[in-house]
Amino acid sequence: MDTAEKIIIFCFLLEGVCCRDFNIYLPEKITALSGSCVIIKCRFEVKEECDKNLTERATGEWYKDGTDVNKNVMFNSSTSSRNFLIRGNITGKLKDKDCTTVFYDLRSNHRGQYFFRIESEGGLKHTYKQASVSIDVIESPPKPRVQLYVEQKEVQGQEEVLEVLEGSSVSLRCSAETLCSSPPPTLTWSSTPRIPLSESSRLQELISDLNFTATHREHGVTFTCTITYQLQDKTKTEQDSITLHLQYSPQNTTVSVIPSSSVLEGSSVTLICSSDANPAVNYTWSRESEGQLKQLQTGDTLTFNRTDPTHRGWYHCTAQNQHGSQNSSVMLDIQCLNHFSLLIGVVVVALVVMLLSAITCICVRKGNGKLSQTTQEGTKRSDQSTSEVAPHENQDDPVYVMMSSAEAAANQDSVIYSPIVFTKSESQEFGSLALLDYAVMQDCSEGLLKTESSIGEFSRAREAQVIVSANVQKKQTEEEMFEDSSQIYAKVKRRNP
Image (cartoon, rainbow, N blue to C red; front, top):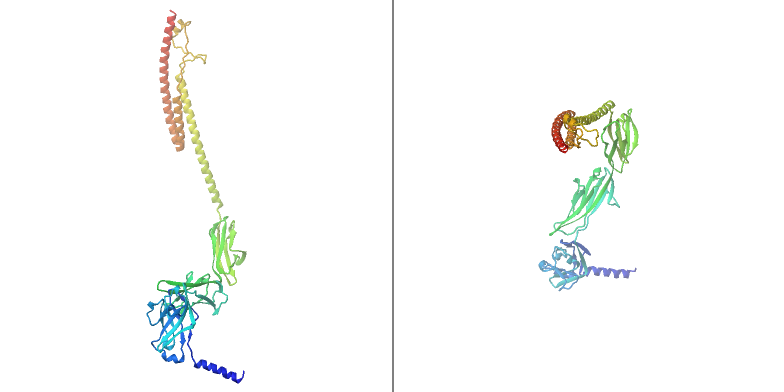
């Protein structure tokens, strides 16, 4: 490049500095929360000869989606904002070429491209069409971001679940994009499950740090950062979370015994070992033998299906992972059985069963014996009551004759024999026997002594009943026989005069 070209370029640059034109500086895009406000950072330039016209009386206007003075105007600083489609205020001093503006209570219909216009004394009027700002109205606030720092170094490529070694210095930082709000938004921390948060956490602007030393208590804890906007009509929030997974040595190792640490000989017992650790632990069982530990097996359970006195003693469980180990112990007591006492118990039970069986048999036999004896006595007395009536030799056709010896000799040839059959009512006897049987069975169930007493009383009553019945029947039979015999004899005599 020769000297002439350099001179021409220098002249053009000098002209640009000396001959200042209208210009404006605006952000390309601004995001506003619905119901909240928006701040537009703005500076402008005018021609050099117009500087003297910028006074305190200068006004600013904003146009939306166009520069038509009649239909696109949205705000005028010289007029009450209530007369326009948007409420706002130019916070910058126009005399100093600062056009910073705040719009309030934005809604979705306020989205669009905004242009600025300056008006002042001396005929200064200019609309800046070469630059504009785009305003976007959103319904929810921007989501904050949580970052993890371990030993003051940011963890890159972090996932939802983070592995941190116990004892490390941990810092969680929450940051959020600033949006216009009155009052300004706040950041808060919470944890699930809830734990006390460190006092070292601080809130500066929209950045909050949470610092603590990692322990196993923070394992699986979810930390949540929430940004809150207090608006006129409602409260709007947004949040971000992070879950910590800590690696730590075994904690709270314990041994439990099912059913208990003291069991009877021959029963089953199970020892269970548990521990809190990450990553998972390996369990090892051992037993004290002659002052030394003898390893038995691995796994979280140790079972003896049939215990004996040799199983008595101390048992130890060791939980171990790559970060450390922890032990727990339990004393197992085996109680020996008393075989002699057991034998005595079996014999006593057997004797009781035999005694009950014997009493039952005696009750049944005595009841049956009394029943048989009573029945025989009743039958015998009934037979005796009819023994005075002599039966005929021909049992199929019995004939009974009642007459004197002289009459029998005198009328031996003309005697007519007539069959007379006497039938004894058996219903009373059977009814009595049924009652007897019921009394015997009932009394037997109440006791042997009561049964014997009842049978004796009932037998005596039955005996008296049978005797009375036999006497009555005997008397009635004799009277009937005499009457019938007299009638027969009279008939025979009339036929043989």
